[in-house]
Length: 182
Image (cartoon, rainbow, N blue to C red; front, side):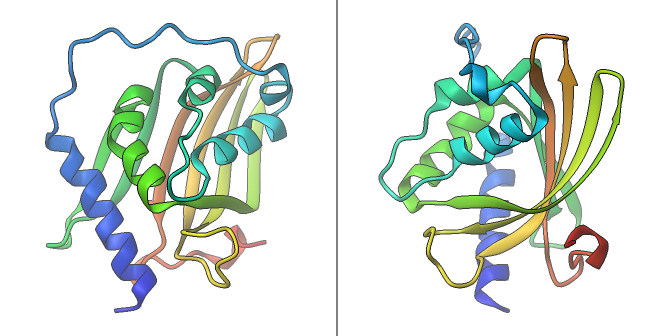
């Protein structure tokens, strides 16, 4: 199995293993005000999303910034295959994601960037298929993994909000289609 696939499988295992971690009954922090430039356009909020999770090993992420991008009740959903082969999902609040994925991103380092985008929009809603590649170090010659983020956005007339980020990493069973690489 290629290293990238092994690491992606490990990452998914960690994501799905985290599903058993009980989430405390604490109230999430109040949503902070966003940086105006982060929410001024669809391009800006997507760039902010990728930027906030990316960084070298040992670097704290700006989780306050991440919280400012999502609507109340916003969700992150990972989809993938468990080691036995069944397809599963892990649904997380923004706080769940920060608690379960944040330490791993900060410990190991992770850089995710968009390599292609397809957008469908109507009125105040938009759906973005954002093809991504991830690396442990920004200058790694080859990506560790690739996949598609399905991102739902809403514009309330004042700013853009992330409603859902729903993703699946590429695998041998599910290679990225050419039409999502252009």
